[in-house]
Every structure is written in C-alpha cells, then in structure tokens.
Image 1 (spheres, rainbow, N blue to C red):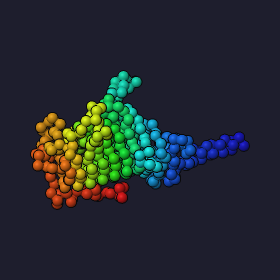
Image 2 (cartoon, rainbow, N blue to C red; image 1 turned 180 degrees about the vertical axis):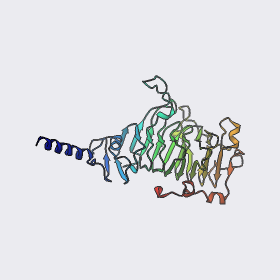
Image 3 (cartoon, helix red, strand yellow; image 1 turned 60 degrees about the horizontal axis):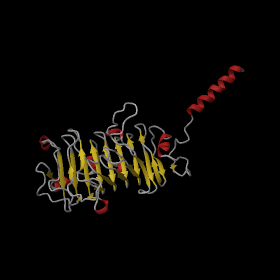
Image 4 (cartoon, helix red, strand yellow; image 1 turned 135 degrees about the vertical axis):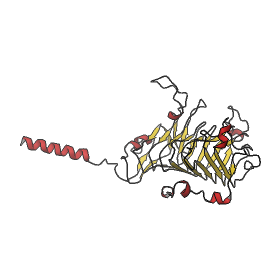
Length: 334
C-alpha cells in the first residue's frame, strides 16, 4: 500500500510538472501601470510567454509610462506588443554609453544602453513609443533589434545619438509609418531594414544614418516615401540652444560597404547639397553604396551630390521592392 501511495504521488508530480502553463494559448495578455490588469510591467508579460510559440500572442499595453529596460530573447517568437495609444503608451529608460558598470567601473558602451532589445524573430511592435530618455551624455540606444522578420508599425522612437540600432547582418526588419528622431547616426547597423512612410527627424546638425552593411549583403537601409525633416523654431536642439538645423547628411558609412537608399522621399532643406559623407576615409568612396531615386523637397537637389553616390534609373528602382529586398518572403509584413 505504501509503495502504491508513493507511486501515485510520483505520477501526480509528473503530471503537474508537464501541465501547460496557463498562458500557453493565443489569448491576449493585458498590461497596465495602474494595477487594473494582471501585469503592471511589459517585461512581466513577456516573461510568461512560452518559448518558440507557433501561434500569435498579443501583449496589449494600456496608456501609461513604463520605466523598464526590456529584452525579448531569442527563444520568443510570434509576439505582438501593441500599445493602446502610440503617443501615450511609452516604454522609457535612460542608460547611456558613459554610465559606469558597477561590477567593473568601466563605461557601459553603446550596445548595452538599449531601452528595448529584440533578439527574438517574428516580433511585432504596434502603436507604442520606445524612448531612451538619457541626457546627451553619450550614445544612447532606444531600440536594439537583432531578430529576423521584426515588424514595427505606427511606433515612435525617441532619443539622441544612436536611437535605433539594427544589430545583426542578415536580419530583416520593416518599419511602417513610424516616427524616428535623433541627433547623430540615429539609425545605424548591419541589418536589412525597410522604412516605409516614416517621419525621420534630425534634432542636430549631424548624420541620419550610419549603415554597416556587410559586403556580401545586397541591401541595407531602404527609405521609401519617407519625410526627412528637422526640428524647427522652439523645437530645435543644437548645443542646447534653439539654433537652426541646416547641415545634415543623409548618411556616412560605419563600415566600408554601407548600403543606404532614399527613394520617393521628401528631403528637407537641412540636408546638405553633397548629401553623403565618407567618414573621413576616402577609400569608403569606392565601396559605400549610397543611392537616391525620385526624391522631392529642398534637400533633394542632386547637382552637387557627392560624386561617389549614385542616382538610380527608373528601371533599377522598379526592381527594388520589399519582396526583392527580403528574399521573396513578405508574408510577415502583410
């Protein structure tokens, strides 16, 4: 009898251990800072999601300011983090590159400064603000994304230097109708990323992009039907003064084979006539892939463009589509 009792206990324990987590389903999780939902922090909701989900799970985040440093790890897939209101649902943190790490006393460096880091694939963010609220004390990343097939729809990305880091060569990301602002190199990295209908805002006389596209990778950054403007009037920020922003470059090559294309975009008057910078290395002029097509606005005049940048023909531009750029797989953006 005693043996049977312990056998039953062992069986019950095994069943309990193998029981499905109550969150192992496609139901939506709700997050609210005021405590009216099951989760008060976005990170808590992410933590309960099952690894390698084969279904789509939504984390709905109600309006509020969420002071969190968040990671979506490699073992999470098919998660959508959706805000209730783009401008009023805010994830914010304030690390910067010169913060001293307590364990070593050394500066944190750029790549640990993120507010949100995404290494999982097939991750979607919608209707939400991701902000690095650090003062201008060094590089400060708002979004660090390394996952493949990551989608960002109607989001705001706020910061100064290095706002968005697309951090892995070969990974594909798509930004649709997003607002992105920053000072220097505020969109940078090696991924293949398509920006469609986005508002790109310079806050300082500096550079919009710093692509580091690998040599063997055919595409890097594509901006299509975007507006490239600067802060003006009382919005303007230069040396902490409201001075005009009039000297911005479309990009400079963080690595020699940087690929960046602006097509069908409106370029503001703050874009310098030469458009592109070689990052102080003339050799980059023979390798960087800097392209434009059919842009408009005061900054779109190409007669004085850097001679090593190139204008696409209509035939060439027609071949550059999301399907082509993403290797024929666009189901994740549709």
